[in-house]
Length: 147
Image (cartoon, rainbow, N blue to C red; front, side, top):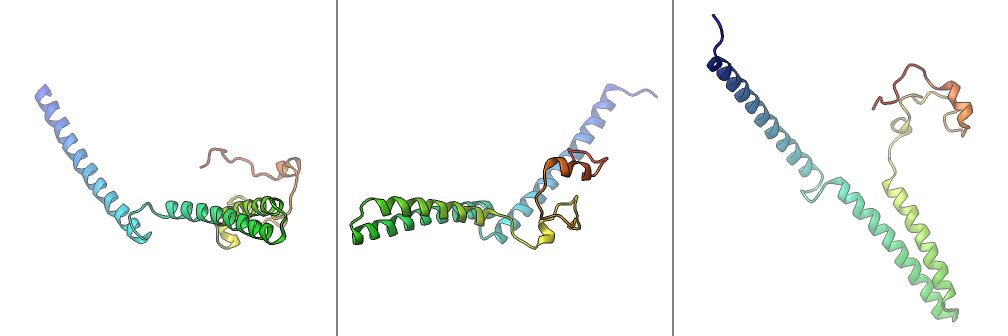
């Protein structure tokens, strides 16, 4: 027996209803996972990314203010205005940049930071080498777009 347009429409409606149900279940699961991760990260403010950004910014500003305050204080004591303020302000800026790099760098054991290509087994892994030296040792047959 041939299908009628009404049969096609009923099948399409049934498929759409099944798809809608699956989408609603998946959306509910996603909401549960997001709520669980927000409660683990210390609240719903924004998670670990916001915390890391605020910490890095705070350390940067604090280092600059501290450097400037030390320079101003020494200038006041030694009557060398404004030279020590300038020097310690610049030192505070350098310290702030170092703090931001330290705060935002990955942490963990060396095994965590090893490249998946070297597997942590390369004997000269931590030694610098030029690109021409490294090219022949690169693995072959791997996609560059592997990620």
